[in-house]
Image 1: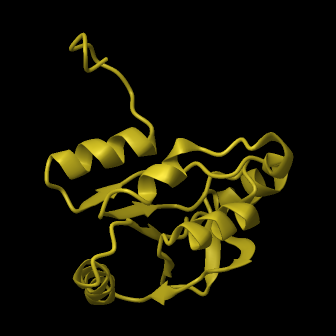
Image 2 (image 1 turned 90 degrees about the vertical axis):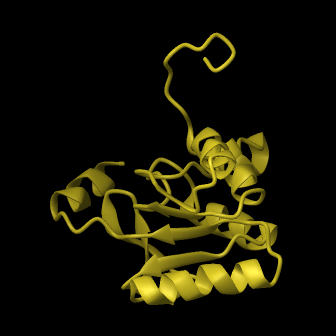
Length: 148
C-alpha cells in the first residue's frame, strides 16, 4: 500500500515500524500476534514478535490474541529480550479476558512507573519495545474467552 500510496490496514509489526520512523514512542493497539497453537511444530510465529525486538516503543494492548498460545508467546518474548508488563495486575491478560491463566512477567501500576520502565530500558541501550498489557475490564470478555 505504501509503494502505491493506497490506503491499507497494518499489523502491529508494521504499525510499530511506522510509529518508530515517525518519532513516536508509544502506540496503542487491540492485541498483538504471537506464537500460534502448535507453533512448536509449525514454527508459525507472528512478525509482531520479531518487530517488538527491533523498535524502542511502548506498545499498549489488551494482551496476546486469544487464539494464540499465550504461554509460548510469553516465553518467546522473554527469550527475545522484550520487556512485558501488565498494568495494575499480576495476571497476564488475554485480549478479551483480564486473566489468561499466566502470571505477568512484571506489573506496573501507574503512568509514572511505565515511563520510568521505558526510560530505564532506553538508558541501557535496549532496542526492544516494552509490551504493556492492560486488562479488558468487560465481563463479557470472559464468555468470549471461554468460547475460544
